[in-house]
Image (cartoon, rainbow over all chains, first blue to last red; front, side, top):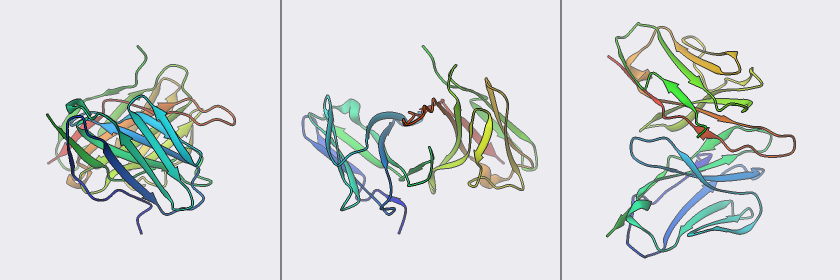
Length: 112
Length: 116
């Protein structure tokens, strides 16, 4: 099993819809979870982080963490064409200090 | 506007040549990371430093790659000799690690390396 897995891509949603991006991780002791956005040809930029079970909201973005099921998700409400990008899930495993382990990403396309 | 800078932005070289990539972290940040990104493998951590000391270089091929931080404002990643399989985008990221807290990593624009 991959350490951080992002499946079911690419994802296409119409403008205004909710985009749901999912990520699972294998190390049950993982403590910190991050979502990065990467536009084509650009560098990753952090959009959200979450440490505790439950939901964390920031504007149109909501991160959801379920440690028992070992998944973290990102919801984007009112999706805009400018949200079209690759979204990378990253995890800091237990004892890994600051070392991020990234998933391969999921590409989101928002259709006008 | 504080940001991580990387040079060169693009590099085309021939197999066997030495490649040196440079990174200037955000002033005041004490942690520097080197990543490599390819379509096949995604984003992989090669090495990272805290307060200029190497903390982890387990992701780096030791026989040809080396990473150093000669001072707090400069990190380097060298490949010698380079091989076509090293073709990738190399990102540097920096962050500020505070005791008991998590740092946010800020990525530079990357160096796009093509080894022919």
